[in-house]
Length: 367
Image: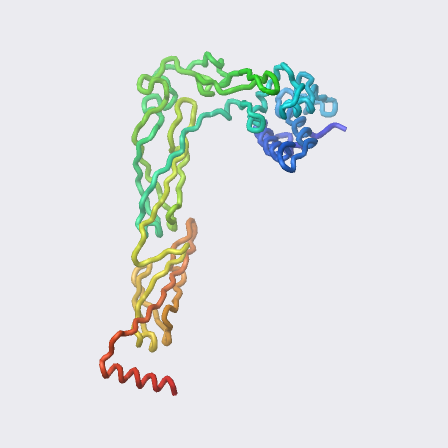
């Protein structure tokens, strides 16, 4: 019975070649025989399926003929799976001096067996990610604020826009890779001579190069310049929180994409409020009579001064909870709470009349 290669890789017939490669990579790592819990038989089956579906020509034949399609020679050139595993583990025999083309899945096995590969997209250059730090006042972190940041970094050339060509000149087919964006090279490995496809060093995978290079950046497509960004800090952010600005990092040059810019937040503490997650903690001092008899006091909240009732018989360090007066949750209408710890101030000295009143009160309490 013919094997269903799509089912083996867990994909359907409309899956792109790139997604097939991703599916194979994931399953290959999971079942690799040299890993704990690996399954050599399953790995062999996955490899067999990928050799067909990962190759556009073979995939067309498989889709057309189905059960009549026969895969030839394992990895190619007649080398079988046992030869491959023996060679990959350092044994004798296997591929000898065969020239096998690994370009279709060299990047998949690259981290397993140490050879390169990959196609035009996988080699796309990406600029460095960078990080800047901003200081926020406590209230700005609680309720959100807009900030302008300014930094000097490597950006796309202002003159050529990053393509390395002198303005007005045309881009021509790269003479090194002939417009393919990649070149082939042969590596001598334990598997023999392996041919892989690598990103063209001349056009960096773009497939084109300028007729005249930009005089401003000398064809690099980049240069150091100042950048300004206005960012919106969301309400509820805390110290250590990070905001990512995609493609606002450093630009790598012609044929690449910029990295990301990370804005790390540091919040200045407030003398009145202590934050715990989305809750706020404060302390209020009251007198002994206020604690015994109850009272109305005015306190600080994030929303300004508010009056609250202190119930009679309030104990020292008792907490009063005010709902929805804490810090807003990020991207939500919900807020935390405010907890007020009551500190009862006991006088250190009393005059005679006050002392007498306390003694009378003590007698009443004992009754």
